[in-house]
Length: 269
Image (cartoon, rainbow, N blue to C red; front, top):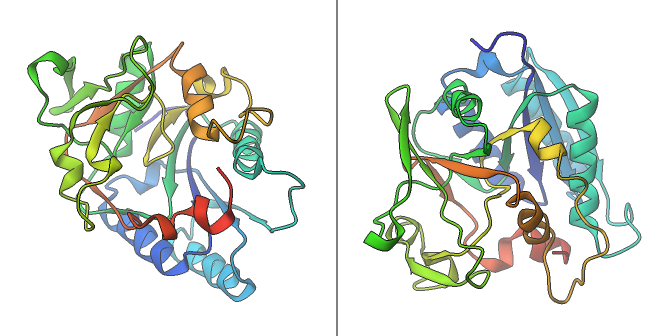
């Protein structure tokens, strides 16, 4: 039990109702401590009106006793190309408005396939002052000797420190990620490599909200031809905090096909 702390589940969705249904149902099935969640924050971007209604109905059915905060964004909601940043800045505002201490963030294309506990991830955040995010997406890898990470155990589960080498080029391929390769259905590609990515992600995992908010807003002034919203924020975030990752293979990406990514569907980065 997490005493005197507010825990929120946040969910982002974009034109992918069939995927969202599977993801939310898998979360409810495999999360052992749903009672820890106080708020469910749901952001949908540009889905059809009939789909929005179905999404709201689904949320009420799956989370009947939670405080639901539902917001819909439309194609004309934002006047520029920084759509993703502006939605994420609204996410920051809602986390602040709800006095959320810890937020489990979930995207609509990551399917849970094994049991997990929110409380265990929060213990990791509380145990490590330098930890700002606990990933439930990145399972333990077949690490080459030169990249063996720091590990420790909480509730008899191994967690490992995400490897990031700021002295090396961003997105440099460090080694083949055999764990992620299991998920890929379309042969070798960029995402089958363990890349040199800063310590931050919007994939399924738990954020220490005070640490998240300490970085400031997601940028609405970066060069959209040479940078992405998440990466720009991650570079700043990684100067202060680190990511620790759950050892188990618990989540499968349902949208490896780039044509089905939310970035492609909404023409933003």
